Image (cartoon, rainbow, N blue to C red; front, side, top):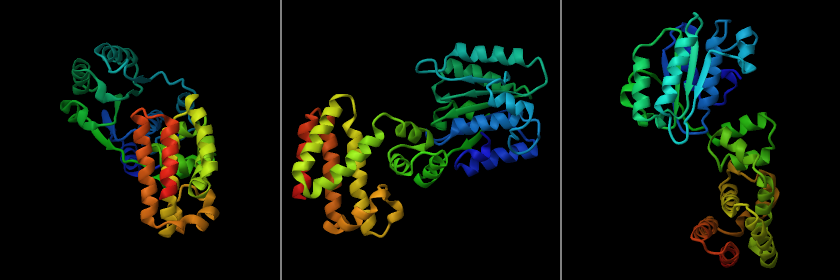
Amino acid sequence: MSMDEVPGQEKAKGMLRYALRSGKISHAYLFSGPRGTGRKVLALAFAKALFCTAGGEDACGQCIECRKFEHGNQPDLYQIEPDGQSIKLGQIQQLQREMSYRNAGESRKVYIVERAETMTLQAANSLLKFLEEPQSPIVALLLTDNGQAVLPTIRSRVQAIPFAPLGPQQIVAALEAEGFPSALVRTASRLASGPEACRTLIQQNGFAETRNVVIQLGKESISRFTAAIVTVQQQVVKAEAGQDPQLLLAMLLLWFKDMIHYQAGRPEDMVFIDQSDWISKHAFARTPDGWVTCMEQVLECGRRIRAHVSTQLALEQLLVNLQEG
């Protein structure tokens, strides 16, 4: 993947493109931002561009170095991730040995440290010494959820590359381009942060089925109480088999929110866009405050289940509350 193919993050990509275009490559970068914003994907794309022999502001994808990178055969790329809950001193020392050994030639070396904020104090201090004496062909890419959690002395020696959360529309566009069904993508984009997390959620066993159950339950909960009870009972059986009822409730919350979006004339914000015909006929069955009350009841149901109330009892009580309005 090239940097151009990474969704969003135009500011971060602009900073990295300038470095490549001008030849002013820092010896160390700190990619900082929430999970799911594409830090790792962009770090790999930037590393690929650093190895590329074409000399542009992005990887060409054609040269031998790009092809080696794409096939996982780039020996001058080194990656570190936490061993358990933290990155330990031994891992940084091994990195230093690897970089020293690999630096026998003149080609550039790149190392990526994931979740850099988890480095132990000893590991961080060891890396600090490595950063204080940069060897020109070596580039460090440190990745973190929280830049402020990284040792201040390390932060002062790296160039910060900020990452902003992606909006739902950007996530939807990216995943639709990958071929995921639009209906599932729109739902996942409101439940997870970033393309990676959304992709994982969509591929989760039962995600599409749960969405279908929510559509059925959302329609039945308003006027077909007996049918809704049967649907709930079927869902309880699945919950006992390992499916999380909280996912159903999270989607049901989006269903009622769609009623408000339709009333307010914001169809572009609707999640269940494939149910527009039904929603258009029933959205005005209650006032906006009435739909907000439905959402509050769904949230209360979730709290009851987390407090170990029987899932079936909590869901049936939710249906009674929704009927009463």
